[in-house]
Length: 523
Image 1: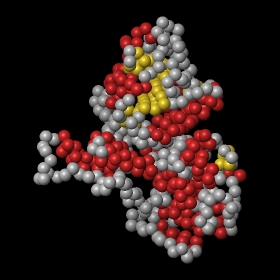
Image 2: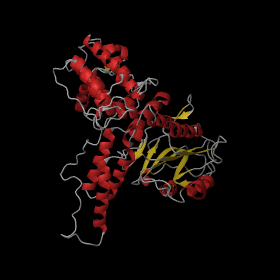
Image 3: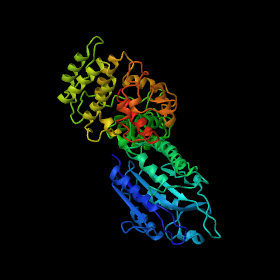
Image 4: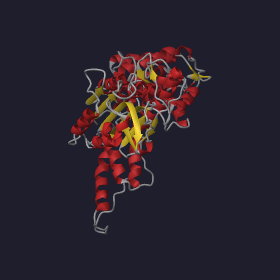
């Protein structure tokens, strides 16, 4: 599993520049996200308003970063995060951040270039550096006008940079919360609300959420920007779905077949940082090292030397899913590696199915009772109670009854056999209209579902009847009848369990990520 280190900087009271609101609050908000919710190993905070943080003078920042990077202490699988909220400037073609003692009439000696920061951070040994920059472009009363950062100068193969706003836009706050819009949306996105795992998902969330909040509170425009050559990179492993992992693996294979061996190696390293036992990745790295040796050596390829290893053996880069366990265990805390999946005859009754599953899967008695209740409700076409029973069962299996909702990490621990059993019961009693597999089939017909965003999710929910006339449906207003749209149920397992927060502009992102994780288990 990869390690994460971070630096969070927020400056309110500049010594020589216009003061800013809530920048220090943002640094502590991000620190709380990184440490408490995401479990980062270390987070270093620099602020000017509390005794807890280190004062972000130029000397303090440079000395700290230089000392931190004296020797590599991270691995290529690790990440280093850098959050900054304060003033910034483009000067003589270079991008600078302004520390608390920065002066516009002496930028070379009082500001810090982003290039210098990333140079030091790269020396720490991490394979990925993530910059989160919320930079103010206010006009200062001086003979030296503040210019906008030159985004193009920040492109680097192992550096991902998120900007709070696009060029020529302002960065806004949420006054009643006393936070900046960008930091607030960031904590939603990477936390359990958004559960964003990849660069692309985080970019999608920030783009929508920041724009929405700024329109809501300021009737203005603020659109975050991204510079990254690795949009499929997994940032937060616990939020990663199997689709995320397979996408990354396909990217690695494609890079390898194109001869981009260093890029392929880095991608496989990212895969193994998330799934250390992935055999595709374990097999790939030695193969790449061999190919790199022959491609860079002075020896010419001959009939006495092995041919460069073909990673595919075929023209298409296809990822096998055989390495994902389908052990028939309902309780995720219990492993039975020799258990086998039980196949069902189409003529079996629900009781026959459940009874055999009870024996094959060691279903605990409480869960067995819930399966029976689910079948009873469905037999009576009591769709509402059946839906609630489905939610209850998923929470019991995942051990999250107290929380009342599921994270992607919890969903990923669900055994596929469990979901297949629930799906079979729904499918049988609804004559093929309802069930996870039905929802999965509909999802795969939606254009853009391979790389979904908020609008793709809206289109999908329109098809299922969870959204009507561009308005999100309350759970109580769903159609609890066999005439409901195909795939209408289970609904509580998505709407009420994956997303516990009010407001679809927030919850939809958790839902789409959670839903993808859920249906991945049906493969």
